[in-house]
Length: 192
Picture 1 (spheres, rainbow, N blue to C red):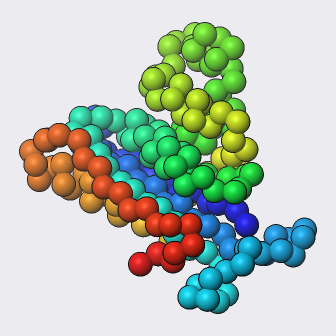
Picture 2: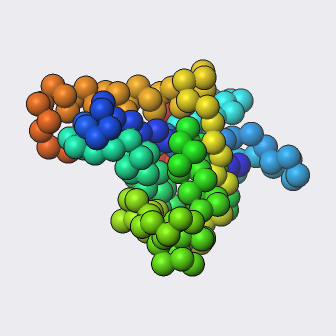
């Protein structure tokens, strides 16, 4: 069993009103090595369902950047993950942001070693969010995967729609305050 996290963030204008979203999906397929699947499944669970959404959330900021929203999506997902207390050792984060994927997989180690400076000695942008994300990722084993946006991935497309919903809401408010909406599902209940 594994947990897949899909995230997206975006802006209308850059900077401008922005939105972020995540979906946490439980993979119910049996483990390839052991052949074991879920522990005892309740009688009402959909037999053979290979995946189920166990949490999703979206929100936005009235004046932000695309990269800040991409980072915020992952931060919100990892905060939600800690509340779910899932018995999983490895998580996979799917993002259509190479900034996030490369930042966590390649650049972060060097930024920290270089006192939060890039390879060309400039201060790392969005340091506050990178530090928060680094703290949340901490001891978790996370596989950071880049996926192409707008390429038909069901969960990436759903995150994109939620992100756009947040941006539209903020635009309709005339740049009002930040928003956040969330739906959490108990570990065993299928998505409504």
